[in-house]
Length: 333
Length: 263
Ligand SMILES: Cc1cc2nc3c(=O)[nH]c(=O)nc-3n(C[C@H](O)[C@H](O)[C@H](O)COP(=O)(O)OP(=O)(O)OC[C@H]3O[C@@H](n4cnc5c(N)ncnc54)[C@H](O)[C@@H]3O)c2cc1C
Ligand SMILES: Nc1ncnc2c1ncn2[C@@H]1O[C@H](COP(=O)(O)O)[C@@H](O)[C@H]1O
Image (cartoon, rainbow over all chains, first blue to last red):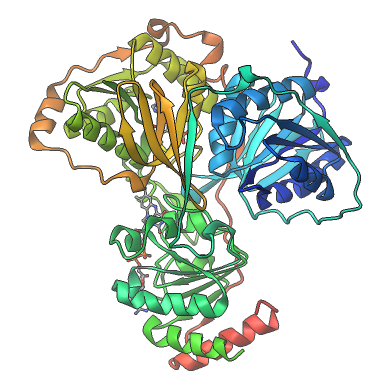
């Protein structure tokens, strides 16, 4: 058995979609470098796919010391089985101490399989990462039970220590085209490719002009809006602010908006720079999906609404009076 | 077709209230329920059975003896039979040990075509057990399904929700599916179903019976553990604008946002 101290380096999974590295990867490189510095080790990025040369360079520009590139012509699309075979091979060869991936639909489909292959722990959806300087262990803190509790998880006896990490909790690493690093090739063979699972098509969600999970500004409406026609108020404010439209669950359940707009435990987890909650009470399940936003503005007529507990700015009053007026005033700025 | 649905007993987190004063969670009177996401898996299995009447649906759960209740609940919706996987030795399992235990029990059950899971459990919120079981059984998976496009005797095609839309994936049976809310609307239990569920014999299988390796279950088989748990502190220095005049409130808000350079 390999000794724990033979595992070295912080590895970042380079997630990509539609030919581009996803921003969460750059956030993880920034955080990964910080952890690597504390540990005195390298930051290594991995990219798996087809036609990925440019992405490998991009990972260097963003701060990876080394990039492991695994390309193969049958890897045009993400298939969890093939990717997990390759990822497990990479772990066996490079023995990283820590692996970080985004807690996205990709990260969450891929890494549970990888964890089983290499028989190590995986902590889901972390929002804080720290090194315990006493014993070099990774302290992985995450919300559970819809955000009602926070737990710090450790993985003491197996390596790598693996975590999926929520997007937008760490700042993106800056890009510097002068940065140098090495790119190494990991040989993929056809035995690693899943021969039975086929990607057939991608269908874009056309109702969302701005991807909610990536949006910096989100204006969300809840049951307080009373009926679908009133959602116009939310859309107009979102337009003026240059933001995306979100909603609480009843809005989706009533069919006022499609599911892709739902924020919360059962919907999307967002981490916006500005999140405006209008006519939303702030049930735990809704808070779970938006609490980590930088600035929260809440508009509600009930001064005791729980949303006010997490809001930075609270307007107590009738949304039907406030929202149109706010939209008008912001338009002038 | 043989379908196995994995369901979990979870506390009803919507009943949990937060006490702002003591900054703690009030769990008193919080009931155990079927993990809400698992109901989408159950419902979808029932819909497949409507299309293919030769289908047999078995629900399984790993949990304490009291978890039998959630098995009866899904039986009252129309699930054919259920197995409780219970043993003190399973206590303190993390997602790896849970996946191992469920996979070992599933192997013991014999042949199957579809393994259905909820997207995630609302207590742990990990979404790791479904893919973990798939890997232990060495079968393909389609996660976060929002629609089943087609099932044949050998293949399945489904829409898999991703951040900016969905992808259409086809794979072979047997396979693991994890289900999201968009998939369907779970039915309520019928009276006849309730009667049947009440009388049903639910076998319990322990670690020895399923032939589990004692090194891979419970605390021993769990590489991760919780070092510390705490309630998140809500220490927002919030500004409240509650003037009678809405316009004043808006002006104060805009001024505050400007002075903080937020806008
Ligand atoms: C397992 C589970 C998962 C869930 N997942 C989610 C999830 O992902 N996302 C989610 O949002 N919910 C989720 N929920 C539901 C959640 O518990 C709440 O029911 C929901 O968030 C409430 O939505 P709301 O705030 O829009 O509606 P309400 O709770 O009805 O609140 C409406 C608010 O609008 C205010 N209001 C009314 N009229 C006006 C007016 N004229 N001007 C100003 N304010 C006004 C009221 O004071 C009130 O606070 C989940 C529940 C469960 C059990
Ligand atoms: N103890 C368990 N028994 C049966 N199924 C489970 C158990 N834990 C998790 N699952 C299944 O795995 C899914 C994902 O759970 P989790 O990975 O814990 O978020 C759940 O929706 C269930 O379908």
